[in-house]
Image 1 (cartoon, each protein chain N blue to C red):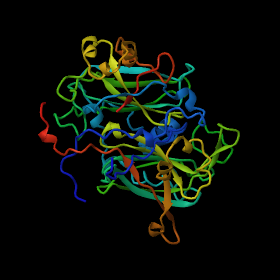
Image 2: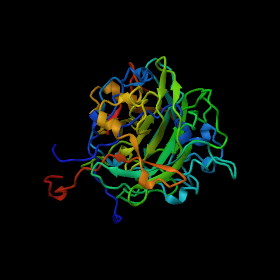
Image 3: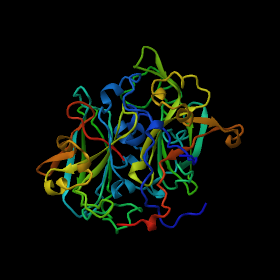
Amino acid sequence: MSAEYLKESASQTAGPYVHIGCVPSFAGLTGMYGGNDLGDTMITGDVKGERITIEGYVFDGSGAPAKDALLEIWQADAAGLYNAPTETRGQADPNFTGWGRQPTDGDTGRYRFETIKPGAVPYPGGQMQAPHCVVWIVARGINLGLNTRIYFDDEADANASDPVLNKVELSARRDTLVAKKSGNTYTFNIHLQGEHETVFFDI
Amino acid sequence: MTQTAKPETGAFSPRDLDHQPPAFTPGYKTSILRSPQRNLVSFENTVSEITGPTFGHQMLGELDNDLILNYAAPGESAIGERLIVHGRVLDEQGRPVPNVLVEFWQANAGGRYRHKKDAYLAALDPNFGGCGRTISAEDGSYNFRTVKPGPYPWPNGANDWRPAHIHFSVFGHGFAQRLITQMYFEGDPHIALCPIVQTIPDETAIDALVARLDMDNTIPMDIRAYRFDIVLRGRRSTLFENRLEGN
């Protein structure tokens, strides 16, 4: 390429103290930003759709849970619309932000999102994708934020034809992207490394 | 620069991974067990990656971008070298990226974080919290006031010290633009010695994270300024977009 463009700023690890900047109340800076950590609440009113919990751990290559990671999820509302100015297909549910941010617990390593089951959204060309959340993970020891997706195990037919899941050549690896339902809770564990390494995407 | 009436909704240019640190960087020991070993799976951007959360200016408190005052008792202020940090959020085409949330956090002037897991012996400053945020203006500009963070030792090699740095979390208009990085200070000899900085394989990419002293925006007898521009991924060109054949 000969044309001159700027280069994206290089990433650096979020470090162990990411909480100070991103979830200051969790970090103990009580009262900062009115005492509300941004992204803590995704449901802001009488939301449409099925309320669910998504929870799990982020495991390192030794199988130990990361107790200093930060996760963000971004998802459509129950009708499959994103609450964003760049959403051109319609107006999303005003009672749902679509964006959540949660730290893993400093003692147990568990994370938890209270959200709704997302609706399906299209793939370029018009085919539908299976319902999913996109996920971004940062932590000490992660140099460039990791992108993955959460799919849902009660959407087997939609998952089987999902164009992104089908980019993953080994079918066993697709299972790393599928959360397991029990009641209203989906468990989604992320393995940074090892035999069960989660599929991460270059988006 | 006039405001675009409609946000752009195209796919992003592929990320240039040669300009980014790889996941496995054994000089930074924590990366050894936290680095995926398999290839990243690529696919074209969908609406899930092209869209992203946005935040309104009304969310901001008056002192959110003033770390000198936003944790200080009334009439008090944080201890340290007073600084303005400012710059622009741009995309890879050099266009301003307006209305995006920029969050920042840092150690105090002695190199100590206000965090229960930081046990460094440097003292906490009761008037310094170490976090702030702002939203970029129509021309992509942002600014905040703070004190210069101190360098500090960290457990990695036997005698590793972080250069003075400020952490940045930056949103774009699409989730694929999400970025976390660190800003360093011109002339700091620790930059060349730091295993975290040196995870970045490209010297020009490191240099782009080094803020420059900006005497033009330094306020005499008050506060020095440093300039730091942030570049987010750009959207792919939409030239000839409507002339494609097929779908």
